[in-house]
Every structure is written in structure tokens, then in C-alpha cells.
Figure 1 (tube, rainbow, N blue to C red):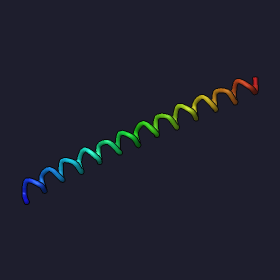
Figure 2: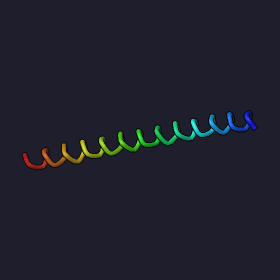
Figure 3: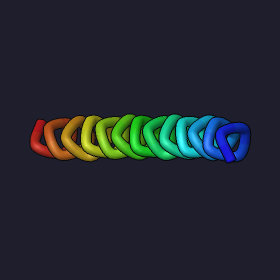
Length: 46
């Protein structure tokens, strides 16, 4: 029982880290797109 619990905890940690990494990548993509859009807006005004 305990061995299964430990493996389950490790799987849960791996899953959590995976989703945190995914969240970080999504945030970086959002920031990148925002910067590109804002730069194009300001360049279009000149």
C-alpha cells in the first residue's frame, strides 16, 4: 500500500510540474503575442 502511495505521489508531482510548465509556456506565448501586437500598433501610428 505504502509503495503504491509513494508512486502515486511521484506521479502527482510529475503531473503538477508538467501542468505548471504548460502554464508557463502559455504565459510566455501570451506575453510574446501581446508585445508583437502592441509594437505593430505603435509602428502603424507613425
